[in-house]
Amino acid sequence: TARWDMEEKLYRDTWASQFPINQIRIDSFFKDSKTPSYLINEVKQMELMFRGHLTANFISYQEDRDKEINRSIYNFVDDINFSNKRLGFHQNNRNFQYYYFLDKVNEGVPDSIYPFAAIDTINKYVSIDDINSMIIGGIVKSGLYDESVDHERLFAVYEQNSGKSSDSERIKENYNQIQSLKPGNTAPDFGELLNAEGDTMTIENLKGKNILLTAWGTWCPYCKEELTYIKELLKAYPDKFESVGISLDRDIDKWKSYIEENKWEGIHMIAPERNSTFKKNYLVSGTNVHFLIDKDGVILASKTKPSSDELKKLIAEL
Image 1 (cartoon, rainbow, N blue to C red):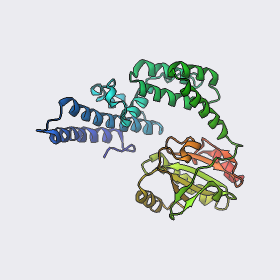
Image 2: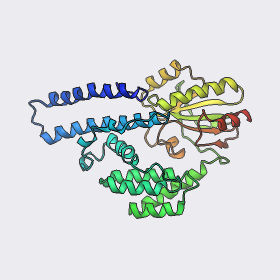
Image 3: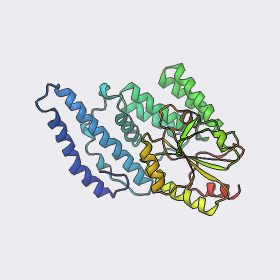
Image 4: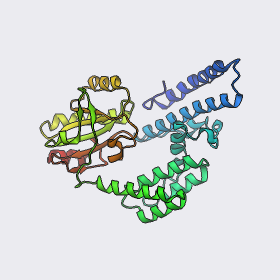
């Protein structure tokens, strides 16, 4: 029941009441079983990691809205075993370590230096090789979007840390993809996707339309906020563009219900597969990603948001 948009006190109170109950449920479930105690403790660790992941997201969401969150909210973290390799696979563990340890990077570090400082921080704190590599890969990919960063140096640092030439080649391919998604380039294929009417669509079906392409999910609070601005743009410029939403949801009924409940007019498709053509070609690893593409299939804006004045201006000029 803990949500990102709660007030801090309510969020803390929710966990204070809910978390002990969840731990008691785990003990109750395994009572009188022959399950080794270390395995039961690992299940409890997973619950801690789940709490950690949600808390990291809560902090990020609140601070994006200029609300300072007291870091004592992480008072449960001392009970997490960050070096347990058996739990290295766990998605909540990986995501929590990503946010939690990057939070330790000095706030005053300039953008041009940030990726290098972040890599040093991760090497200092993250001991599980797979998680260390995953986080550093994410840092490098983000750094490749920033023109103030020395990309050649970043490639070199990544190669030193990954130790695998194949990983470095993947990062360089990623860099080339980032360049290809910049304004002025032709929008790539997104494969055959199921639309809300049950038919399949490709990017060819959208030629001749100016579109605002949005990757989103029903669980994403940022997406819901940006949807407000999408609807405002549609109202202000009804003949200029169409909204095209590509959901990363896996639950089709939930996806369709969300569109109907929020009265989101536009073309809707769904791309639930982890390695879908859409995710690979558009470098979509999460939600709230937007591209403005003109009727000839040329990218006009990437790394943009419907709430930005820049996007509003571009749409007005279509």
